[in-house]
Image (cartoon, rainbow, N blue to C red):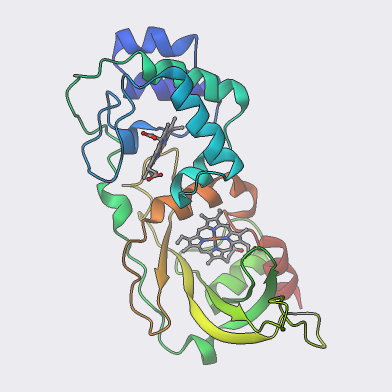
Amino acid sequence: MKKYLLLASILTSAQFTLAQDSIGHEDAIACTACHGLNGISTADNFPNLAGQGEAYLANQLIAFKEGSRKNTLMNAIAEHLSDDDISALAKFFSTLPIDGEAQTSEFSTVTLDQTRVKFPTDYENTFTQYSTVNRADNKQVRYIYANDIALAGAKDGGALPDGSVIVMVVNKAKLDTNGEPIVGADGYYEKESLAGYGLMEKASGWGDDIPVTLRNSDWNYAFFTADKTHKEGINQAACLACHRPLESGDFMFSAEALRTAAAN
Ligand code: HEC
Ligand code: HEC
């Protein structure tokens, strides 16, 4: 019943009645964080959903889910919607008035464009590399590092402590003449060049201003370019949305690898 409480807090009572018999996914992301309280968005980069055709909305969500329509944010969100969620959400937004007033919901996205994560100086010498990942889909090889606080926390088990920092170094793989990654003797792709850094860092209270449906406890995320400056146009909502389902591993895909490294 959690879903109804959530929706009740973001929708007016009339809308709530509507939503109650239509939306059925406990983890349904609060779409209103970005698309506005009434489905009329308050920011240019988020389209209005109110009053759009039901079939159109459903088809867009299916396309985002399947990946044929590409948008990092919506791909990550739609991935977790069931077919029933999609029909219910499409139905719901199609019935909202097209001339409604743009209103930010309490899950406003303002804070999602911002991040508190700073690039850790000297991570190369002070962090421990605990995982390497070949990414066949985008021809990358990624090196994942943790600081000592995260390692010590992983050893103790449970969620990682405040002050934990994870750095994921994203490298383009070296390609052969067929455009396929060259695999080295260790089984990992050989590195061609540095593409950037994905970071997550945790500190007390950092999750407080993030909508609860996107919140990853107190983690913040950031992406840095090869010269270690914040990458333009990155909204951490996409990071939060994709890592959100991994609560049992403290929102990390590599939680198991970190635990293993910490135990040794
Ligand atoms: C964190 C921000 C964010 C959240 C949360 C979000 N969206 Fe979106 N949504 C976007 C952005 C950005 C786009 C534009 C994508 C593009 O340019 O292709 C979009 C596009 C869409 C579209 C296509 C609209 C069109 O006119 O083609 C639909 C439908 C949609 N979202 C539905 C949803 C639903 C349903 C939810 C909740 C389950 C949701 N969105 C949650 C950011 C968000
Ligand atoms: C589409 C889903 C998706 C999105 C969006 C996403 N990640 Fe991840 N992330 C992953 C996966 C999967 C891994 C595991 C490593 C791999 O396969 O590359 C990962 C791993 C990581 C790691 C290493 C720790 C861990 O969880 O294993 C960091 C740090 C990270 N991501 C940061 C980010 C940042 C910063 C963003 C936003 C700019 C982001 N991620 C967006 C899927 C995603």
